[in-house]
Image 1: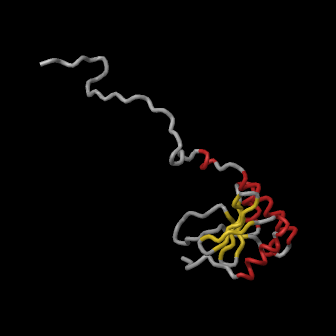
Image 2: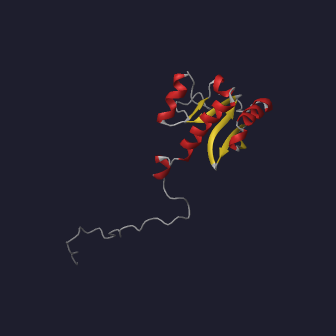
Image 3: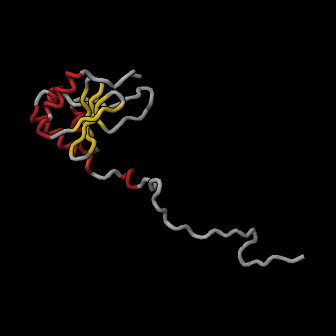
Length: 145
């Protein structure tokens, strides 16, 4: 397991310079840097690698280039929906911008898991049907002694 997701300041700044036309807001997180645009989290800079958010349709572009998913915890079987960006894309600002716009569009789509998530604390739950508290089966009267 990596000790830190930290990247060099030079790499972080290079990525931000390449994406300057997108008005990206970087935010430090767990030693790495989260990338936000239009209020959505679309990328991660970690361990001197840029990862962009993917969905089923965009993942194939990354896999075709031999790129791997972001896996901050190598000992765990699950990966995240972020894939490393190919070096040729990273080095071309116009191409990286195109890939980043696709990742932003993916991040803006509602996630099915989030839609099915339970209500947050303080949210009103749907009314429940009243529970029957009697131990007597419905339709049977209790015998008196």
